[in-house]
Image (cartoon, rainbow, N blue to C red; front, side, top):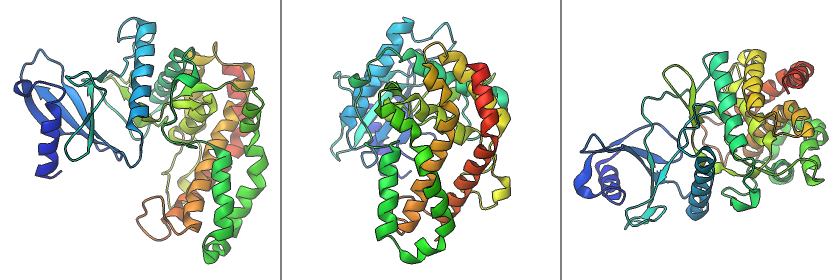
Amino acid sequence: MNDSGLTQAQAAAGQFLLPGEIGSVKPIGSGHIHQTFLVAPISETKDKLVLQKFNTHVFRDPDAVMHNLFIVTNHIRKKTEKIRDDSTGMLVLEPVKTLKGKDYFIDAQGSVWRCFLYIPDTVSYDRAPDTSVVYEGGKAFGTFLRLLSDLPAEEVKITIPEFHNLDFRLEQFHQALRDGRKDRCEETSSEIEMILEREEQMKLIRKLAQRGLIPLRVVHHDTKINNVLFSAQNKALCVIDLDTVMPGFVHDDFGDAIRTFTNTGEEDDPDLSRVSMNLSFFEAFAEGFLGATSNMLTQIEKEYLPLSALVMTYMQTIRFLTDYLNGDTYYKIHHPRHNLQRTKAQMQLLLSMEEQFPVMQEIVKRLG
């Protein structure tokens, strides 16, 4: 963080607190999307704030993001009547308007700034340490969906078009097969074949949704463990990073959570022997998630939860391979074969899920 960036943040903080009230502004966190700062007031009786410089390259419509943020958090807050949901012990992220009552502030450089109340005494994880944390993560994301189950999907806006649309990702993949680098298409013929032979099976959930058999809901769309804050006792406290909250399907959230929570290796692991789905983690997440959502989900939604884990892993495999075939134009890479390495690791995770799929189905049936 250079001095000009910190000076810019200090000036932006003055839009959310009176300049004479600001004690310090310090960069925090290691998020890849937004630049984040902790704003501490001079008075210890006032709440600390989290200030973010909004990334408009990733989220091109800050109005839509902030609209969703206030709609969703206000809806949850009204349902629970106070910030703490006494039935779950969880907190609700609380955005803060500017002193002029605006959702965000645009400075002289054109940068977009927004603010939240700081939630103290929390921990977060990039990888789940044990099944109890996985269970809490499942409960947190399930509770989030349950509290939004009566919010009409049409009231929230699209913040990233086609984000979890498998049909769209397959279109991109087939275009890469036609127009991408021929040497890379030949090199990855086995991976391409594995994707093509699974295409119809993986479309099943979306086809059911298109027939109206799976309801459109307000869902999170980025259900990684680092988007849950935990207490020191490892109890889930708050679901964060609500920028991707959009209309979608329960399978988007459950499937991507299983993809990220249960992987015994890294997303780009060069050693495929380390990559598999941890079945105990799957069961722990499903138990927490279904404990919070079972009464609101339809039978068909529950039935296809196990398949959603395969679908989301399949879709991420496609995205990595598509980028590799196109010459690495989307994902940041650290070496020339990085996207291929990612593809192979995700495909290995998918194969592990396929091997354990009957047991996954039994677990969900028992818990649901």
